[in-house]
Every structure is written in structure tokens, then in C-alpha cells.
Amino acid sequence: MKILDKISELLGEAFTACGYDKSYGKAGISNRPDLCQFQCNGAMAAAKKYGKAPFIIGDEVAEKLSGNGAFESVECVKPGFINMVMSADFIGDYVRSMAQSDKLGCDCESKNEVIFLDYGGANVAKPLHIGHLRSAIIGESVKRICNFAGYKTVADVHLGDWGLQMGLIIMELKSRKPELPYFDESYEGEYPSEAPFTLSELDEIYPSASAKSKEDEEFKSSAQQATVLLQNGHRGYTALWRHIMNVSIPDLKRNYGNLNVSFDLWKGESDAKPYIADMVQDMLDKGIAHESQGALVVDVTEEGDSKELPPCIVRKSDGAANYETTDLATLIEREREYSPKSYLYFADKRQELHYTQLFRTAKKAGIVGEDTELKFIGFGTMNGSDGKPFKTRQGGVLRLEYLIKEINDAVYAKIMENRTVDEAEARETAGIVGLAALKYGDLSNQASKDYVFDMDRFISFEGDTGPYILYTIVRIKSILKKYEAEGGQLCGCVINDPEGESETALFLELTKLAETVEGTFAEKAPHKLCKFVYDLSNAFNRFYHDTKILGEENENRKKGYIALLVLTRDVLTTCIDLLGIEAPERM
Picture 1 (tube, one colour):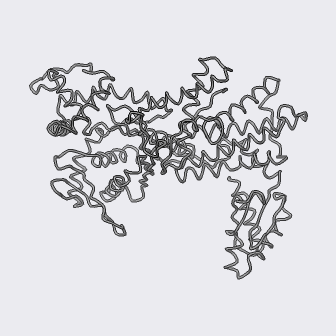
Picture 2 (picture 1 turned 45 degrees about the vertical axis):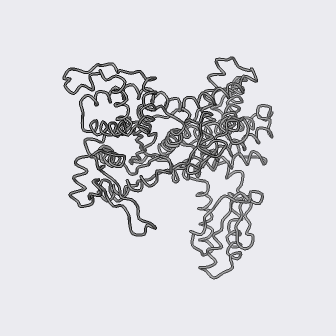
Picture 3 (picture 1 turned 180 degrees about the horizontal axis):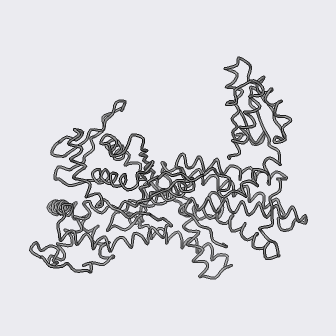
């Protein structure tokens, strides 16, 4: 149970004992920590119902609570705020219960419900670039948070493997190697088992074809036609498509793995193909789809919209499927196989119109039930120092693996300045810390907002950064290892009641975990968890600087400190795991 719920129970009982409804006894964290720890504003609302001045009601409730041992002090201040400082025993009991709980005091019972997450969204045959970063790491973090909250999750990368880029690659290959059997319409034999290109060649083929299509209308038209033929099962193009998939996907898996991002499903747009024909016919039979300029569309504007929305195109005028087509058909497959409670889609916020069209069409067509949640989590862009989307010095889009290497190298250089570890360990540590710097630097921002990528700030070991959080965890680990090396046993230590300002502040930060996890899950907002982790790290470091932990002569007190450190470590490592971050053993 959250500590605010426990305090609210006590407040509710006091309001009831004074003749008022218990619902007014809702506690909140004080926004004036210099005055009190917790606050209740219920007397203000109760005054309207009971026709009394709020400070009179507040005084009555404060008087009723004054003899309760859970409170060190309770005071009503005008116009009617009830300010509370909890007793050391009450706070100590709550924190001790966290240490004994499987999920550190969070109300996260297992639920027999599935949340389906669609994130990643890489295109096959294109290397991951920094534009893929936010979808991957925000989606991964939210997935972990949903799991921790007790839900079953299914994560699908949902590859772009069925669109125009495939037609472009096929036509570029045809222009380079026309002798290949895939382009011979009379060929009836088995196609080669080896791809006619390497990964590095494939990386070059697509951008070349894309550039050509912008200058050569005939080439572009042939690529569009090849896309339609592929989607309709052209034998040679399908064999080429399989080669492209077999060469590209292992590289995508490697790059996502470097981000500590994983998926349950590696499905693509192509997997929706078996459902498209019946889906389109069903929409026609229900009368919700109609022809417009040769395309088949569904009107999605609803009463109350401030402006008319463009219709959702479910079949293009040339008969080809588009994103809307495959996304809708993919929903049919997901409903049949998983029947989730809700769907979460992660993509650039500029795609909001697409998802509005998708969700409204899915509901209108009965693909998902009215009670099924369809939620789009749109994120802003990672910008350079000029405030524009991040580019390389040459003006291109930076490949993700190059960005990771740059930040790892920068962290390695900082570590080697101290020369406290050998080069091999420094490289390994730099990989962990560099990834934390990158992910925390992103996740600590509200997802919907743009942010500036600042290498120097991200890799700093001070301030609100990933390295600072990891350094705090490593500091705790170091103290605990030293305690054990001196003959101490972690399992025999129990947290004492807090004494002093900095220790009490650390206890109070720990008590916010359950509230933070609940809020982070409800809003699907990892930045809330980042703020908690940073505040907790600050509280620990103040406590560390104010306290002789291993130098404490009172053995019981020392054991209490050690137990407090174990809990703080566990809370921090649990939270960074929810962010998709790991901590090294030393830095």
C-alpha cells in the first residue's frame, strides 16, 4: 500500500470521528517541505458542504489526530490546510515493510490481461538511425513498467517490409544485375539459397535507389509496379524479398540488442497479407468503405471534431496496400492471437493523424471492441544544438550504431582520465555507462517534447544524468562490499527508525516508490520514474556525506545503515531496469 493511502486512512477516520465524510481525508505530499512532510486540503472542500469555516474543520481534525502515535505533529494553518509530520516509527515501519515486500511495497499483483506494444518500427533493408532511437527505448521502458505492474505484455517490432522500399531495391538490383533469375519471367527452377548481395551492399542499394526515384520518374513508376507485384505474390520478387529479410533482420536484432531492447515478435507488414482481402470485402459489405478517386476509403470524421479529417485509405488506386491497410489487417491478426486489453503504439508525434485514422477505422469496422484501448504515444524529436533534428556534420542522418560508438568512446575517455582500471574493463564499463547516458538522457524528458542531444551533459557524472545515477549505485555497492569484506553479513541487518534530517529525507524519498510506479504506469511516462531515481540518488548522496556509515561505532546503528543501503540499492536497480538500463560493478 502507498504511504499516502496509509495516511489517508488515518485522516479519513479522523474526519469521520469529527462528523464529516471520510472522503475528505486525502493526503498529499507537501509542496512546502520546510513546513511539513504531508498535507491535507480536505477541510477546504468540506467547508462548502458543512457550512463551516475550513480552519474550524481543520482544527477539529488536527486535534483528533494529535494523540495518534503515527504523527509527530499535526497542525491546521489558515485558511484550512492540515500540515503533518509523521513519526520516525511510522516512517520506519513503512520502509521496513518495503524491504520485506517482493516488489518493494508496490501494489503490482498479477493480472490476467494482455497489453500489446507496437514499437521499434524499423524498415527492413535500411540501417537503424537516430530517428529509430526514441520509439525503441521509450517502448522498451513502458513494456517493462507494464510487466512490473502485473500485466502480460506482447511486444512487436512491426517491421516495414512490404512498402515501396522493397520495390525500389528490386528495381535497383534489376538495373545492376539483370541476368539474375529473379527477373526472368520464364524461369521455373529453384532460386539460389544465397542472397545476391551482402549486408554492406544492401545498405548502399536502398539510398541509391531512393535518390534515383526522385530524379527518374520512369524508375519510380517501375518500383511502384514492382511493389504491387511483390504484394500480389510475384515468384521471383518474393524470393528476393526473402533474401532481403534474411540479410537485414539479423543486423537489426544485433543493433536493437546493443540498445538492450528486445521484442517478443518480429512480425512485419507482410504478415498482414492473409487478412487484407477479407477485411476489405467486410468493409464493403458493411457499407463503411467507398471508392474515392479510384481508391477505397473509410470516412473517419466524427461529431465534435473541430475540422474534417481526411478519410482512411484502405486500398490505393493502383490496388496496392499502404500503411493503413497493413496496420488494420495486423490488428485483425493480433485480436485473433492475443485479444489484448489495450494496444500501445509508439511513433513520432507527427504521425498522430495516421493513428487517429487507424483507431477510428478499427472501431468503425468492428476489428476491435468498443472497450479495447487503442493508445498512441507520440514522441518529439532529438535535436542538435541548433534546435533542428539531429544530423551528422555532413548533413545526413546518423546511424544509431555510430551514435552509440561516439558516446561510448566519450565515456571511455573520461574513465581513462582516472586510470583506476585497465583498458579492457574501462571499455566494458564505458559500454554500460554510455548506454545509460544515452537512454537516461532521452527518457528523462517528457516523451511528447523535443529535446537537445548534448553529449557533454549526457555523459557528465554530475547532475541529472545516467552516469550520475549509476555512480550512486556503484557507490552503494562499494560500501556493501567493503562491509562484507570486514566480516559483516547483509542478511542479518534490519532498518532502524530514521534519525536526523538527511536520513529522514532518504526514508521519505524511498516511500515515494509505489506512488511513482503507479503514476508512471498510468501515464506511460518513464520521465516520472527518472525524476524519482534522480531525487532518490540526491537524497542518498546527502545522507552518505552526512553519515559515517562504516565508521559508526554503534553496531546496531551500523547494521541499520547497511540495511537501508541494501534497500536503496534494490530500489535504484529495480527502477533503472524498468528504464532498460544496467549498472556496472564499479566505475
